[in-house]
Image (tube, rainbow, N blue to C red; front, top):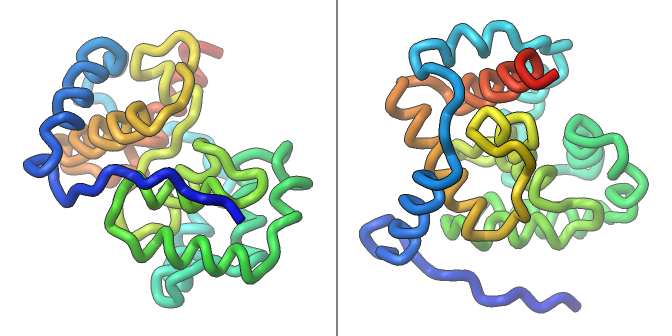
Length: 199
């Protein structure tokens, strides 16, 4: 049985001055938006969606929100959407384990615990866990992806840590709120800008 390291407990930025300090430092030193903010919506329209992500949002997401957890087929679909390489490992998860951990992750308001719970699933690390939250959690979450990070100033992805994840969530949420755009729009714009500029 895996024992989780107790995550930090907080309910708002007011309750966690240390995290607020970290977010400010990481944002200043790492998250440097390469795209003019006014162009975010336009870049999102250039995202070459084959319909798979929109189908997840239209068909899967409402069912998961109502049910409170992922089924095994839904879980495997999300894992394959993010990375085909993880499919063999993701298939090792039983339906019961997937239901238990995704239900707990979607139910908690603890940001650190959410992603820690998902990472207990076989084949699920930070990028896939962020994808699950992006599409199926009630809250707004970005997808942790090297292309999105390049558009935020990172030539190479850093080592993923909880501190970095919480800073990334805070930065992208603030950007989306400031522009009055869904976080999905911001996510697509960051990915597409890298695709066209970085190659």
